[in-house]
Length: 590
Image (cartoon, rainbow, N blue to C red; front, side):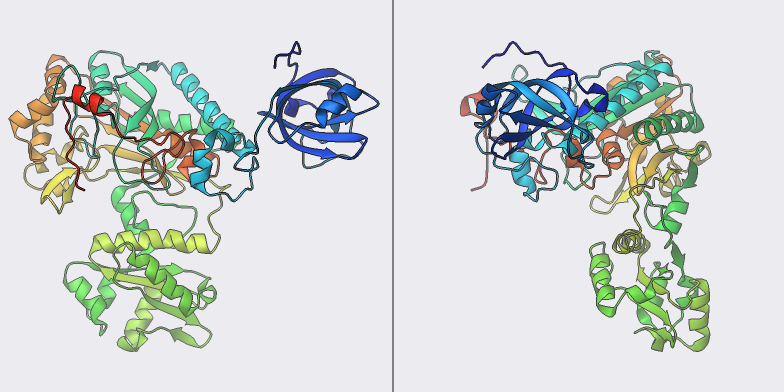
């Protein structure tokens, strides 16, 4: 149905200042209440909800039409703004209501399969199947509005700082950059494939070779990897690159960007400069390279104290080159029963721990199943080192360092969560720097790049590339906020000679390196400036700004945990004809 009415206002923006004004609103029926001579309708649009009153004495025609209204009908209403008889303090428009003089039903609606309200408890799968209805909720629209505002702030800030927005290709060459590529078959080049970019890494480096000096892009990236609450197969990056810079230059401009975002979106002040800690310090204190520093419970190394104790689990861990470390849940010991501690042990086992030893200090003294293995002097030293006092609970893991770090690092976060210490109104941002350049892949028994193969080593560590690669530090940096890696970057290698050394350390022959990355290595021959950059995960940043726990809450049309879309049923089976055109023959196991 068409109408000559033209919308004059968004309903949720009306206030008492508009009293006696005639307005025309358009939107959806959130709720209808029929009180005989009066019909009340909550009209919803993107700006919020406002109450419409249909009174027979004002317009009998509009009243009769209002009797037909159902949930999610789309309507246009013209009427006068009046003071509401009974104020609704829960609505921004709660002081006013609109007495309808004309009503046009623009469209009807079947009964929706999900409720259009923020506090529904419908399954996520159903929400995603009917995402177009789910997105009508005020909470979802608020999230997307914050996403829009953040992207606008980023574009304005970087443009003012001299960055130029440049688009890079989506169909590119498959290269070994870490995660698995999404491949796209080429019809005109049978048997060959494009890859969807995991990041614009190579192209933004080429833009620096091109003399663009400062580049940015808000760009889609793709990685075929296992999903979780803060990961999607297609995600959005704020991608930046700068020429003639060092680590501190990149950090300085990007923490000012984050300060602007948090101030303008949340009115939260980030105090600059942000704290910086090295990767080694992050692991020693927090067990993770993306530590949440809103609370304590830092790791304490007790290996030297227990290496000769009577508790074989501890002693053998140290003897085998591992360590014994603990976290002191200071002041909260009485809140954890033995059953609670067993639950924490089960949690730690998810990260490789074989068990969880513990000591609780009470009014009566030390309570612990391992106390019998320590003499009085050893126990006193253990309590002193862990600063354990009455009311404390100390949790220990003994194993190889990687397991100790991983299990205790996650455990300290889980304990804080169970104690309600994770305040979503508080934001603690830090930089983690000097990551290892390489990490050892046990499956393939070789070194792989910790970040990517174009990361520059710390200058004084370059001689170690061929002799002790495990000791080489990277000129890399991550921005971590509340335990989430929000952004990461590095100073890049800009010399062909050093890049070839890097490929050699990664196990590439010269021929393999040139076959995979020849276009980049070739470009490096023609005067490449020193350069570096960073990429922020926009989805993860918005998740923090909106205080959501799941990245799917801030993406309009996300994928599920198994990378599928309940709305469109993607991925789907391709027609035989299409496969034939692409020279593809499927060989699926029954």
